Amino acid sequence: MPLPAVAVLVIEPMRALTDAIGRYTLQLIALAHNDPEKHDAVVGALSPIDEFRAQAGRRASDDDDGEEDVEDDDSATNVTPLPTTAPVVLATVA
Image (cartoon, rainbow, N blue to C red):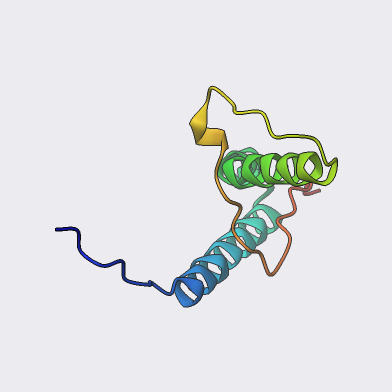
């Protein structure tokens, strides 16, 4: 006999995760600003976040086109984007 489904509220954990990612990125950007030799390491550390956001943007724009979605062979790219409160900025630190 199957167990009944139980609703799980994830909004608060998602907000906590979003805040933690935002604080992490700010700390990395501050590190790169204070120590320019760490710039490349910081860009590397932030690149997965940047790539995720770029993929989410592409998926959102594809959905806005009104075209039928085509399944990708790579299911790892079909991830629901996290809500963000602050943009992640990868900028060259001078």
